[in-house]
Length: 82
Image (tube, rainbow, N blue to C red):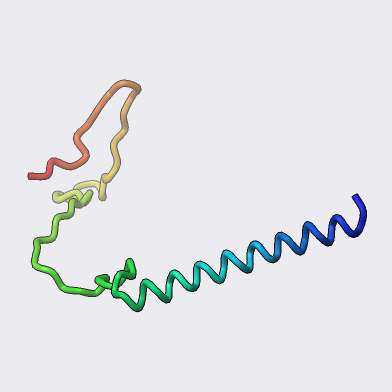
């Protein structure tokens, strides 16, 4: 390839990246202006209950055994949520 072909390919690549960056930034500005940004409600308090499971050993005998040793084909219940 000649120097001119390499330069043309480089120019097209830079132009495409610049265009993608500008369009992405314009989309973010539009989303912020109309209140539909994906993280708008990140810090909004909502009614609800905490639903989580812990792997802590409640008896604490011999340490916190928070893993399961399984052989091929065996199954176990990880969390029985009700």
